Image (tube, rainbow, N blue to C red; front, side, top):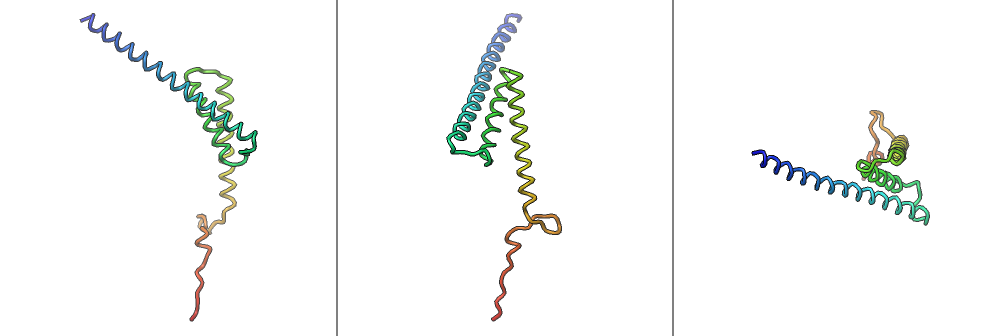
Length: 128
């Protein structure tokens, strides 16, 4: 009986160990994807194909820093984690500011709901 249990645990340990190696490779691949997104975004920014004002730039930075943060779950580095957390917080802060600005520029109805452009257009009444 003891031999069966030790064989089972040996097999189980081998399976867990194998899947742990696979998950480490997946986390590292996600980090490399984040690096690639950073490089593509910076290249487009430097060549003038992208500016830092549209939401696409912030989406690139957010996705790249999130990918790198995921990879840091396996290979932790405090400095890298702090800078990528800073990037995520800044991008989310910019998104909130942009949302507030967009929201404050829209006309409102007295009930507090947004007025749509269709409700501003009144059908013309032709008297025949």
